[in-house]
Amino acid sequence: MPSPTLTPLKLPEWNRKLPKPKDRHPQRDSAILRDGITVLSTKLPGKSPKGTLHQQPFDSILLQVSPLFRQSRKMFLDQGGQYFPTLLSSPRTLSSPSLLLQTIEYSPTEKELIWSATDPIEGKSLKLERLFETRAYSTSLFHETNHRILWKFLPPPPPLGKTGTAVERYLNFVESLVVSLDMALGDELGPELSQVLYLVGVTYDPGTDLRRRSIARRTYRNYLHACLYATYLRLCFYESEDIEKAVTHLYGPALSSVPGLTKRAITRAERLDEAFVRITNLDWQEKNRSQVVKALSRKNIEPLNLENSPLDNRLQYIWAEKWFEKMGL
Image (tube, helix red, strand yellow):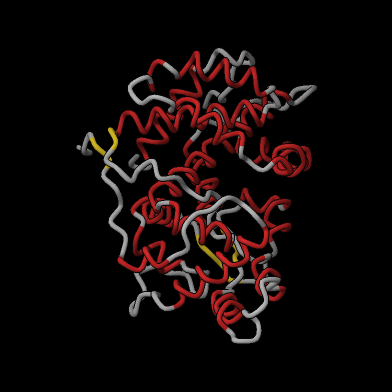
């Protein structure tokens, strides 16, 4: 039976050498990216953990330090998934229907990233053109992997109606489940390591210090529920004031033991990239939702049809609870 308390992840001593988290600024991010890669390049395991993907940036480090990352990787491989090294840009990752496939492509760029950051000439200027060009080929395999696990874990989507709104709610919920795991990974790794890996592009959340102290597993799971639902409502284009009211009403009582935790969850969801919310996610759904319904429909299994009201979160809560349990959170 899991411990009722989530203890902080014991990271190697070299984590202290990573740049300290600071407010976002392009020039500051450039220095953090370069200096962080420089530190990590000297800390790659001498013997890579079993299952490390060849030249996926810092995959060996993630497998070495993160139980959540290892759990996700194992589940995907156990269900027959596989990874394939190829040239893959971030835009192709975000627009392709390959999200439905059990083969995940990635660009093997670890050596190129390390060279771009540590070469005396390439790494000298804070513009770091070569490093940022290479980073454009990074893939968050954790995010991509969790999508594939969810396709098999959740009930199928509802039929595609005249407006498609029921399917949109389903897909927004799936995305919210995945994003909540991105957040959990960031918290598990802590803000220093998460910040570097986020800037590299191999994780999608820069992390917080929430797990720096022991926290009750139930409290942290309730926090993830609030993050997830705030993200879901945001993807459904609810206004900020309505999101705050709904999440505070639905999840505030369960988080009352930690002052400010509900607000912290709402604020975190608000940081989700605006271009992803308004453009990328919407475009992907419009292009691929009919293909999603066709590919995921299963006979004799009732589809997951979420209620339209933002105050009716019963199904979201039930399936999120099963999801967090499955992932060991």
